[in-house]
Image (cartoon, rainbow, N blue to C red; front, side, top):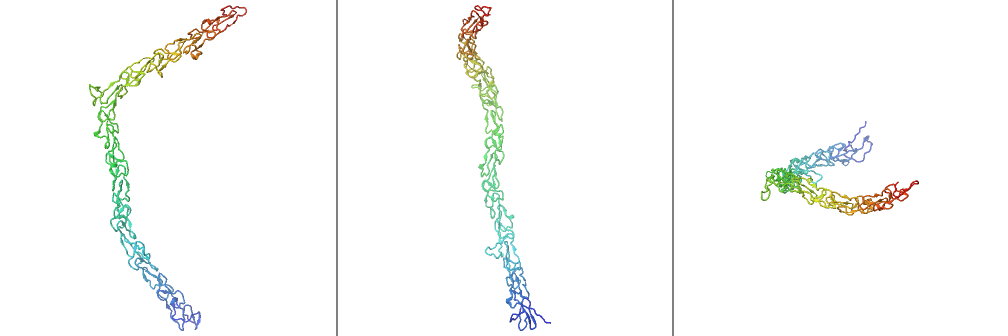
Length: 573
């Protein structure tokens, strides 16, 4: 049986004169990848750093460089020897698993041809590292911005003042706003110091940034010079850690005040009994007075005296006004003078010795006088009040205007303060009640109009006497009779009235009217009057012969005498 010799993949023949071909040569089968010569040679392995994946390799030139991230020992294999070891990199053509150590500042996990730069906040000092070390807390490990293929190779720096550095820190972190740090190597933000009360800290600084602004206060962790507005009732100087409260006796209604001048003295009539008030606390109590800056509603030194009054909220004691008095201390008001009396001066008692030359008006004394006739004195009056014109008052001690009596009808009461009527109303005028003049022209009376007359003391206009005419206003007695041929019933305004509107009329047919007639007189039966304006009885004619006049007041005979009768003069029926 014939034998076969096959070349291993990755091996090379020692010599080669011509390209082999498949088939039989000298009775032997030759396969691809085998070099033939006059005699059979041993296959040679690829050189370290190379490998051959194909059959039929002829020389080292047929061996490929080892792939990146792997190494090739040159063994007889059909592939790479293995991956690069951790901590090392294997570029193309690497001969060993430890070909190139990863440089400081980088690391390799193996099976790579490129070292990985340490991440921010980590570092390596030694070559051949398969990992990077975390930068310790209190320090930071920066990266060189100009070197992009390499991390930190051991450049470990102290964390500076005003900052903190946790583990794996690349760049120091500033202390938060409202804190600061005068020391290095802080591990966390919790180690930053709270800003000093009265100061503010912007953050990232080794000292406080500055004082809190005037009008504001900073309690201890302030990141701004205006952390809290100064509240009303207080003021805040620069660098205040808490507002300064306004003292008692003062108040401040405004916010953001920056000096003690903002605290105002308590307003007169009020008191400020506590510190830190933003408004007055209340009004001064009744019976006491509070000047500006008072700290009590009842200042002991400001109690109202006798003869004075202090209403609630008084800034000063007030002397009792005329018409009043006060017998006690610490009172809110004065007592009005009793009704029916008048008090012309202020005092505190009931002795009427305050007359010039007799006594003097001192504390505890008030002159009280009874109201005289013709006057009235309401409660608390300082002087008598005269009864008004048109009234009178015959009694002393009156206390209301209603006690002033309206002037009697037919009379008048001139001027004020009368205790009786002035006299009777003038003739030609009438006075109903309450007249203030003898010839009134208002609701209390007036002049008599035409058709009326008014004797002296008249209480109302009297209609003109029947048979007379009152031709003008202001008549006292009627003076003119109604003319003959007319009659005047009363209220006549003409001696020849044309109709009842003028208070009468003309004498009609069948009647006669003598001068001064108050009504028409009918012609008697047996007579008649065919004409108007009959001035007397002569206007009545005897009934004509042959006729008869059956009744009075005829303007013509009743009729002719009937057959079988005769009618002589004055025949009536």
